Length: 465
Image 1 (spheres, rainbow, N blue to C red):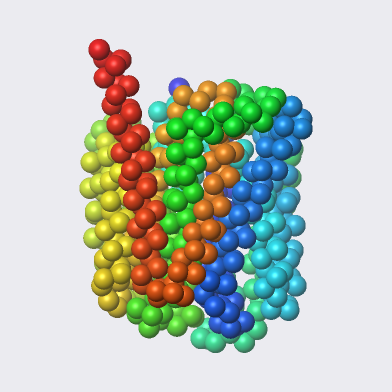
Image 2 (image 1 turned 120 degrees about the vertical axis):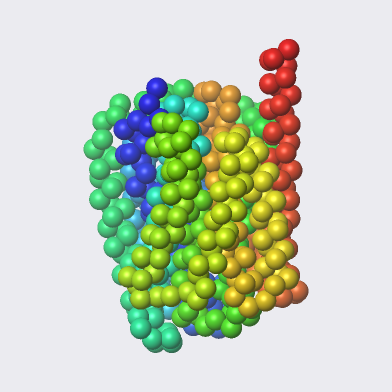
């Protein structure tokens, strides 16, 4: 079977949209915090409403499936589901007009909430399809490649939003221009929605084994009780939590540790999200390799190509980051750990979680720019945790994969809850110590990866015997 099918290439563009909005939130946080004079924990409501919308969207999805006595996406079709999700997100972008014109925090978070609802439906449909769109042994690599597309959006988004607000100045004069990048994004949502709506269902819904007839809520409850599922749900919760909260609190951390201004933050936020792109490109290189030597060469070339791509984007926007070449050392560490993981999802989860713990600890203890780079480099080791967790949680689920995917998507709310928690903790102990929340998240991921790897070895030994 081919490593990728046409289904995959029909979907990957959506990942760009998700990345653009998610990363741009981290620039909106310091902008609205300064402009409206709100506290750090209050500014985290931007992340909170966006990611909690995923949970609300997943609950609505499950309830509608229960009412229809059939999996919602199986009923309406995956292409139609993606189209409706895009239309919902389009409506959300319209709220940026009153948000920008009236400097309204309320309209901003309403718009982000509606966009998040649309993304919830889109991701519920897209992730199982990406995993199923080719050789199952390359499922996590396809998700990583899609994640690499996602991170083109996360890299560009903060710079575009920052430019719309600041242009070439250091002070916020008005927020009117903030609406334009989101309105352009909304138009793209609409265009792609029409494309998916017009697609023949057979051209995209080629793997019907991912559907589940939802006849009773007790069936869902029984799934949640399975350790593979509930531990995976918690893993997604803390993974998205640490990934999002690390970025969402980065602006305040950089201000205090490296004396950066709000107008100078965007390149650092962009670099954080670009670091995820670097890691995902490294993982996705396996798809393009047909021999061990080519695999090794591409594994080295892809992450550095992603880093060069970031530098080009930075140059186009006439931005710079002093000592940005330090990231090369972190990339080399990534390649070493990737090699040691040997393509095993659970083993990679363990190694990357250890790296995350070490980097956050160094970020807390070190000073100046070095501390900021340590926190930014955390993104490298968050880069492939999503596909690793999905691969472990969905393994062997068969026709239950669709509903398990929905349960996992529901836990994206961790990005909102943990960001809000860290923002509140920072009020008590300071922004530096608040990053210990991230250490606790990685500690669970370390345990989850170790537990999964141990279970795999036990199963393999039984099969061998």
